[in-house]
Amino acid sequence: MKEFIKRHISDSIATKESLDIDKINETALILAETLSDNNKILLCGNGGSAADCQHMAAELVIRFRGSVKRRALPAIALTCDTSILTAGGNDIGFENIFAQQIAALGNPNDTLIAISTSGNSENVIRAVMLASEIGMRTIGLLGGTGGKLLNLCDTSIVVSGLETARIQESHLLIEHIWCDLIERKLFPEFF
Image 1 (cartoon, one colour):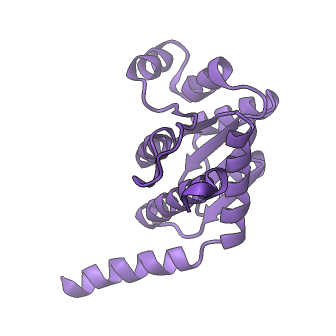
Image 2 (image 1 turned 30 degrees about the vertical axis):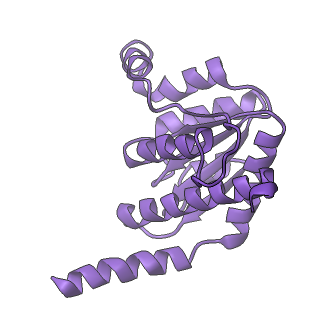
């Protein structure tokens, strides 16, 4: 069992060590710019990626570091309102649940973070397409080869590999790095 555990840990480390630092920095700057211009960040994804949306939105609205007593930053996880999600799934189809929320809440110059370990989630694809149409910036946080979303998003970070768990672990690390860099960029007086 110990070797099995060590293999999980070493696989996770290897996946994280292969991340594109330049892309992480580039996308963090886009997110910081979005917020400094008084625009908002919207996030969408399914399953574990839905939980990531919720987690990152909380870090931005509340704070990433407890020691940084800053103003709230506008971020909305489109994965949280069960009434919207179930009404949308029932009335307009699950494939449209995020796009409909983009239509209601998205504005030009807002940024959509589209999280998908496969890059092929239809409801995330439709959200990205509509966000692009209305002038939002789109960032893909993807896995594997990036799937269809790779060519639809303005920019993407792709965590290589096929194991969903390793991709999700890396996505969470990237989200934490983004939140840290956003706080450092927008609130330098705390650092």
